[in-house]
Length: 87
Image 1 (spheres, rainbow, N blue to C red):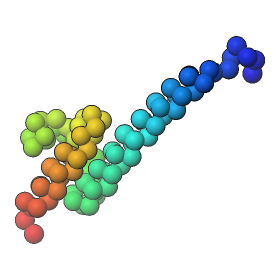
Image 2 (image 1 turned 90 degrees about the horizontal axis):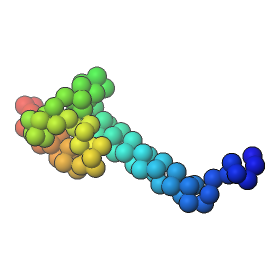
Image 3 (image 1 turned 180 degrees about the horizontal axis):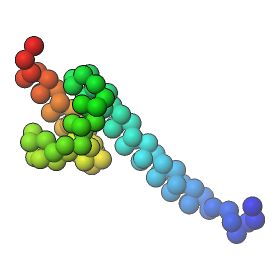
Image 4 (image 1 turned 45 degrees about the vertical axis):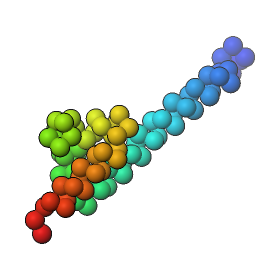
């Protein structure tokens, strides 16, 4: 690699920040999927729930809200649905 091809420290820092942001979003999505799988019984049901507009979430999908950083709202909705489910 020649000097003109090297990334500047600022470019490397920007790439690291971008990676960290994507990593946090992926971790949040995984955490919600894990909880949804426990509540709904399997991966397919959890995946369908994540992608479907939910009335309790103002007709937005849980995946959209997780991407917007609203993981706590999604988990609260999921847990509220779990508590209201018949046993």
